[in-house]
Length: 188
Image (cartoon, rainbow, N blue to C red; front, side):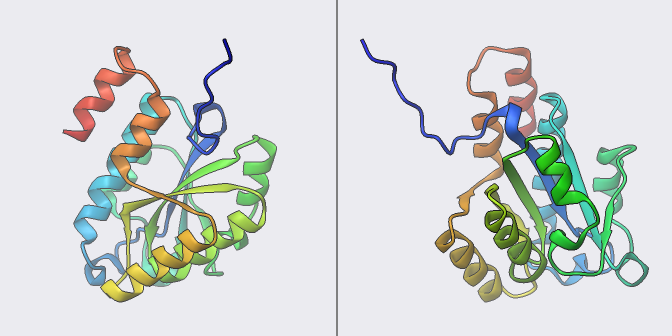
């Protein structure tokens, strides 16, 4: 009997990482549904920690926009941000090279703003041969139309559009494990 194939774009723990883009204090108050973005980003961080997977985060011009919001920083612990002046994270120091060095070929993306830093980063990741899984419930923009248009454009260029909960259960693959129990608590 032949082996049953699984969809090739499903996330696999050995090739996945989380990238949190610019969820900074001074921009958050003007972001549409910002509390949802923060809450779902925290779920992603906790889930990736349960699974022992790499987490990266960026800050856009921290001198002007401040640091990452405190509730997310608390979850990130000792991790250090990749600072950037470019909108795309391709300009955030060695970040893209780090993905290549560690064979991280499937990057889960969350952050703000959908139509600027997130979109430019996603398109650059795709251009560099990396699959992007966008947590649509953990990204946003100031305006709903900018968010919707950006998500459509990213989808048109090959981004896997999904949700926080889908991402975590995809990485788990099976139920009944201690990690499954921990992640199930996170998404309730």
